[in-house]
Structures are given as C-alpha cells and as structure tokens.
Length: 509
Image 1 (tube, helix red, strand yellow):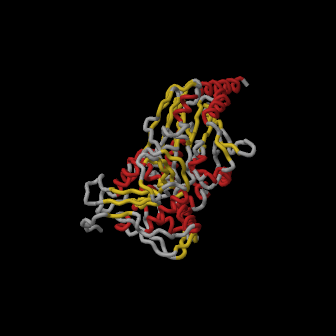
Image 2 (cartoon, one colour):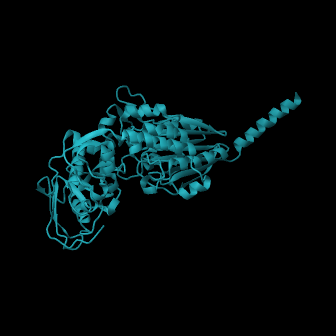
Image 3 (spheres, rainbow, N blue to C red):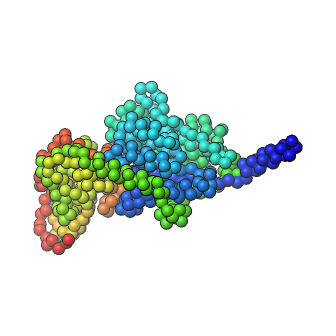
C-alpha cells in the first residue's frame, strides 16, 4: 500500500515537473495554397502537400506539442480541385494532418453553402469567429478550439477578412456578413485568455496597407494574442513581424514555403517566440520521402478530374488561335474575346489580358471544360481594380515596349483602343488612347478587369502592383465559359490596336 502511494506521489511530482519545465510548442503554418498541392504546381515552385505532410507528421512523432494551422484560400485555384467545387481536396487535407484552418475570401468562391458542406466533411475544425448568417446572426462555423498539448493549453480562434464581401463574387456571400475583426478579436481574447497558456489567431487578413483591416491593425488594437497565423496578402515573412507582444507569421503563397513558429513555454508563461520559413530542401531534411498515401490519393484525384474535364461548358462559333507568336506580338481574336469576357463579368470600364496567359486554341463547336482550362491553365482569378489614366498609358507603353520581339506581357484590351509607333524609343511609342470612344483622361480614375498575376507585377507590370483592388471574381476559365454561354463571341474582330509603322520582324521560333 505504501509502495503504491509513493508510486502515485512520484508520478504526480514528475507530471508537475514536466508541466513546469520549459516546453517547445511548434506551429507549422500555411496560407493561400489556392489548391497548389502538387510539387509540379506553379511551375514546380510548390512544395507539395505530400511533402509537407510527411515533414509535419515526422515532427509530431518527435514532439506531440505540434500543430499545423492553415490561414485560408485553400479550396479554390487549380483545375483538379475547382472542378469538384473543392470536394476532392477534403480527403487530402484530412490525411495531411492539418489541425485547424480558417476561411479565406476565395474559399467562398463556390458559395457559403458549399463551404459549409466542405467544412462538415473535414476531420478538423474550420474556425471563424466573425462570419455570421444575415437572417439570424448566428455563427456559420465554430469560432475557436482549445488544444491540450503536454500540459500546455493552446487556444486558437479564426477570422476572415471583411473584404470577402467584394473579393469573391458578391452573389457567393449574399446570406452571410462579416463582423468587425478587431471587436471580435477582443471578445475572443476575453473568452480564451483566462483559459489558455498560448493564444493564437489564425486569420485571412493580410498586411496590405490598402486593406481596412490587417493583421497588424488587429495586433495593435488588441492585447493578448501571442501569435497570428496570417494569410491573404501573399506575404512571405521570413522572421515574422512583431507588433507589441504579438508575432505575426505568413508563408507567402502557393506552397512556396512551409512556415514554422516555435514558442517556448515555461511555468505556463511564454519565454520566447521565433518564426522561420522552410523551403523544399529543408522539408526534405526533416523527411526525405513524401507521404505515400497522399501521393496515391493525388493520383486518384487526377483521374477523377480527367473524367469531369470532358463536360461541355459552352459553344464556340469558330476556332480561335493561341499561336505563340500571334498572341505575344499582335492583337488576337482570342485575346479580344477573353478581355471582353473579363470586362463583362467585372462590369468595369476596361479590361486587359496578357498574351502569355493564353495557352491553347479555342475549338469550334462544343467547348469542354478541358478546353477552357487549357487556355487558362494557371488557376488565375479575375480582379477588379481602380487605375489612373496616366497609369493606363504607362501600362500600354510596357505592353509594346519590346515589339517586334515576342513578349508574354503583350496586352489585348476591351473597351479601349490605342495606337503605337514601334519605330520610336521604348516608353515613348503609344500615341492616341480612347476609353469607350472617348480620349483617355490621364487624371481620371477608371476601373479595370485583369488577372491576379498582373496585380502582382507579373510580366514586369510594376505599375499595376499597388492598384486598389475593389473586387475579385472566379477563375478566368470559368469567366470565359460563362461569357460564351450568355453573350457569345461577336465583336471580337481585330482593330482595337493600331500599329502606325512597320518594322523588321525578327526570326523567332
């Protein structure tokens, strides 16, 4: 009896020592994957879900005080996933071992009801404390979860950006509204701080200065959040960002990095926090072999997607060419059609599309899902932005800067005409510009529809990086199919861009 008593006493003392001793809490984090889940995605820059999962699982075996949190924009992007409205991604995420996530604006791209359905199929919680139903004010998702890890209580709550109201198609969120994330954070802190040793907010908020609510603002205007796992702005923060006592982490986008935050806890108090971003080589050092089950599931998901790709989604009156040297050097009917479709969907003043973004011909007759995706294979989404007239001129100068050489950034346009003289020096070639039949007003602000690639400065369009984004819709392939079905393809004949002089054309292949 005495032996038993002392055995129990020793066990209790050992437990107390383990709780009081310094413990390491590891938080792996991802954001803005946009369904880039294969290591071949994004021209091979994506780490791959199987690779990341293998690394995280390896660490969890060694240190059970480990979590994987995802900050949203996960279910929409690449054709293999979007074609199933995100459903084919659910079993992959379940197998990967993610512990909690929040919803990004693009996770609502299939509508709030579909996101609810996806969340119910997940084996881990989708946390969102500021998204409520308009009809009754009730939360759409669970607001938080408390994890108990080796004597450490970790509270995690989720937040979605209020920009979702216009950074997905507004029709996708007609039944929900987004509450003030600062005020909701204060409520979550009041609820969770007394119960937890570590408080984490996983949020799709971002650090863009153009946003009303950012993770930085939330950290400044609240007290009590230890770690913010952030997304939305596609920002890589190699060492994190420290605001007061809050560490903000974000891992860029498209699975280019796996984030890892390490928090040291002693006597229920945080004694240190650090952040880092892991690349492909560092992931392989943790576990050199990708998760075999996820690889098998990816192969099966690709097979399923192939069947769905045969669905007829539109009709085309004629074949339109995407021949490389045509679309990267001259105005094309395919480019005009794409730009018209984008402007129609966005209800903007003008639209542009880069020739390098048109990767396949549009066939005559039945147009299948695989055809529209072949034209736009990168999962790019359509954005609506505000642009000053002077910036439009600068943009068009860049479009024709390299002519007669082929250039992936050569633009086709909608509701706009312009002329240029290729015999003149670069940056001084564009002459007359008209918007809707009226001369360009360089002091006026217009709305423009363009792909997200260009708002990130793709093809050297640095002048488009700081545009104010006022709307965000679906992927370009979805927009094109919808336009063909509802409008057609009239008025796409060339004649919007006038070349004032001919110059020798180089021999390119």
